[in-house]
Image (tube, rainbow, N blue to C red; front, side, top):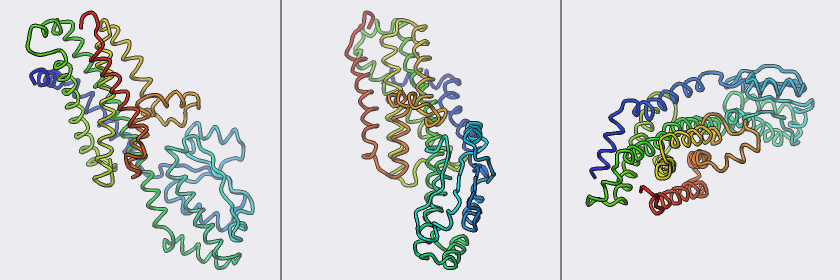
Length: 373
């Protein structure tokens, strides 16, 4: 236990380590989540060729959650507005939309978005809920426009079908905020990799490895105590982040105790990946310059490709496919699945990939011997 306790003192004895592990993720989470939780978070660009009472009712409902602006029906103009973040999503409503809906036909809005699966997903989901409800009311009215608009007026006043859409919109928005938060937390956890490499490298530099041979402590015990010291740090980091941030900003790491425990388990598994990578680097790197180079090559690309700094959906398909092979992607995809209440079984593949990487890296680190270890 001596090595474990000494490692904890070495880590927490430096204020810069606490800042990088705890303060930076906290500040990033509080700032960006507070900004994203502000009013009129979304801007919807609308091209309404139908200009009917129905489309006006739907757009009026959307105004509670987004700013509505008119845009040109030009592909280049729509793309430019999306790329420049002038709008979150574009809607195109063809002429005759209301007539088709009232007659029970299947008519839909045409939507355009760059980050549809992440940032604009909540508002897209709300639009889908509104239009789906309109289609259902149209089928029930059987072509009777008076009956249809009477039902739509009741719907707009909140007396019909609103519970489902509000719940789903809020749930999706909450999940997106939490996944974003976990992305920032992943940045802090990557410092576990740095600690693992730095402390082990310092021990090599000062001959700790050589002196261990003259003590009752085996090298395996030495490495295991190092491993557990980093796990303790990870647990402290997760507990603090998961309990402090929800007290400051509107975010939840699980709507139930079961979901929260699942998110915690997924996060701990990712922490294990970071620790395993750090230990492996320290075991085979020749000097501090090599360690610094390897960490630089790993940290930022892994964070970017995994969607920790921005949504993966805005990256080219080829880059997204590369990102499928990095642990940050497995971590955030697994977290997203359990936050939706799908359970750990639904994300077994991502969990298995993280666990498998940990086993492979630690096996190599503990079993393979090098000249000085």
